[in-house]
Image 1 (cartoon, rainbow, N blue to C red):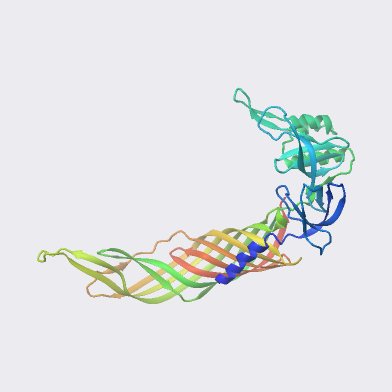
Image 2 (spheres, one colour):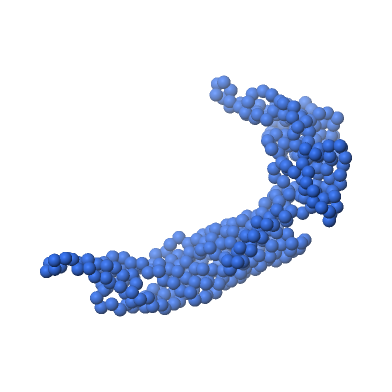
Length: 431
């Protein structure tokens, strides 16, 4: 099992970046030459620092950056970036507009008669009317001399003067916040209003999706550990009871998965609920355990008498549980081809015991040791942590193997491996 886990870790570390595919696109170099090529689409969240590309689908991978190119685009994606020299004021918390002329990498959000851009590194937005220069959309939030927080919505006035079509534009602008989605909606509406052709590049962005699956499988329990508390006239003792017998329990439930909106939905959050049962019965003999050294003062003796008490115990146990596992975790997918994927995941969660039976009994032999009684078991907090991986076919059928780092069910800690099959019931886009 350890070798399997090591293989999963190595697979994750060595392939998490190599799984990104090359897609058709182009870049324009500093000589203003347009180079059609295949670009490695890394579904960038931050500003791209370099671009890996091939001149043909099976060609050699080469690397370029914005020192050598002016722009690049991956077709049918939201990834279109331009290097532009603009007046930019990066300070968001000071009064006034104090720009510097700098080269900036801008992400093209909307392109048309009125175009919208974002400097992803700063979260600042820019716009451009046809045949005009690119201008910054300015928003300031600062503290004045009297300690009052001032919000300066300069961008609303700028858009009212230069990007206005409908009669209700003033009302819309009063509600327009300095947010990407609201700007995209405004510029798209403006281009539609003036009957201008435009492209909203974020329509092609990787969208968040949720998936619900039915689960069924089984768990192989490879061992049991339980701390059993005893009491005697000399104090309390704890016996670590173990049982290495294998047992199997079945599970059924569901899984809710949220595919995150970047890196081509390779990262996901997972939430699952499974109903399971667990049963273990055993009889085991322990020799000379839970002993204690007792010192006794005897009046007739000059020195105290020290005596060691140990027990030979035949211990019988019966543990029965029905419970619900509620783990939360993360998952990463590796593309094998258009229909097949591998995945790895890690989860932590709680266990909700529904029914609990813990029957414990013992016999001991020791003629001189104090009498011994077993304490009533008390239910404890139940939790689990697990890692695993699996295979998914056609985004509909999956089979996975999970290794439990620990699984504590009330008073029992089990060593567990589970095999789970799943079937996709539905999948929908979130945003």
